[in-house]
Image 1 (cartoon, helix red, strand yellow):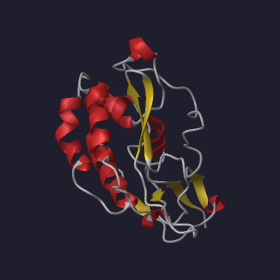
Image 2 (cartoon, rainbow, N blue to C red):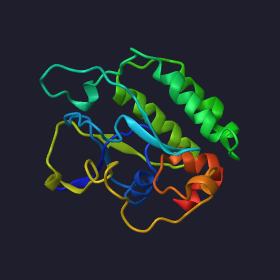
Image 3 (cartoon, one colour):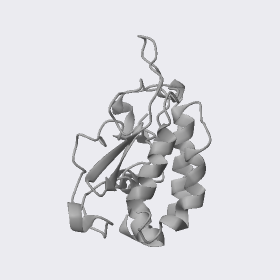
Image 4 (cartoon, helix red, strand yellow):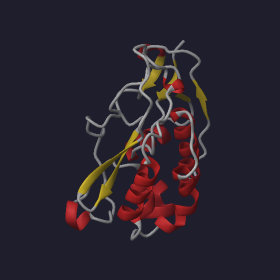
Length: 202
C-alpha cells in the first residue's frame, strides 16, 4: 500500500523543506532508518552572511565501515562547533528585525549537548514548527522502504547541490544589498527577517 510523503530530518531545514511540508502536511513520515548520506542538509544548514552563503555543519562521529542508520548517527564534539554556529548566527542576524524575538529559545541548542543527530534535529524541528505556528502531526518509518512505497519521497530531492523546485519569491534579507537575494536558505533566515509573517510567505 502506498504511504504518504516521506521527509528526512534536516538541521535547521530550508525554506523549500517547509514549503513542501505545508503542502503535504496531512500525511507525513520522518525517515529514521535510511543509511546516513554525506554532504546533505541532514547535518548542514545554509545561512546568509555578510560575504554570501555560509554553511553551518554539525560534525558527526565517523562510524565503522558499515553504513549507519540515520537514527544512530552520533554528534561529534571534538571541537566547539556549537559556539561557532551561534557566533555565526549572531554575526549574520543580530541586526535583523526578529533575531531577538527567537534568540532565547534557540540559544540552548548551542549550549546543551545531544548524543544523536536525529534527536537534535527533531527538537529543533519541533521548535521551528512552534515558531511558524504550524500544526503538523507526523509519524516515523519503522524500516527502510524504497521510494515506490510512498506517494512522495523528499529524501533525495531537497539537496544542497540541487536548485529549489518551482519559482522562488524574494523577501527582505539582511545583507541583500551586498550579496543580492539568496534563495532557499535555512528557514531561520526567513524567520529572522519576517517573524510571524513567515507563515504567509511559505
